[in-house]
Length: 111
Image 1 (spheres, rainbow, N blue to C red):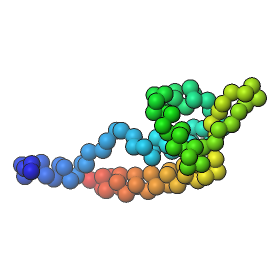
Image 2: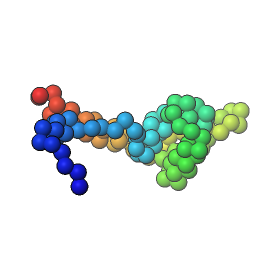
Image 3: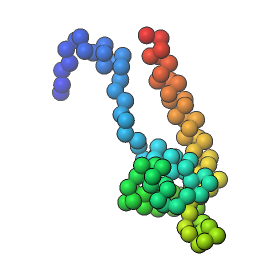
Image 4: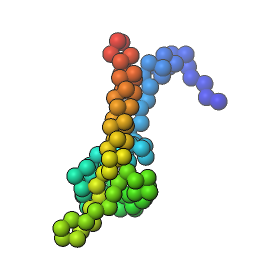
């Protein structure tokens, strides 16, 4: 059990620490948002700042959940495109994110 001096308690409750790391749901939403027009794996890696290994795991999950579809372009290259279900996921995620930011940021603007 850690003990904080009384002077630091108001600072902790007044300014909570936010993590700069993305969670899995945010990464999946970002992949889906980027692949609306159809992208190859290399472009997804660059745009979403992922490693190849990470991308493979996310693509597998998104394909299983039918949020992402595998397509071939006119030259036969594999591309990934967001499905209708995936577009709905992105819209709902962005709405939830906006709601959360509104609830979190609003109290700090009143300080």
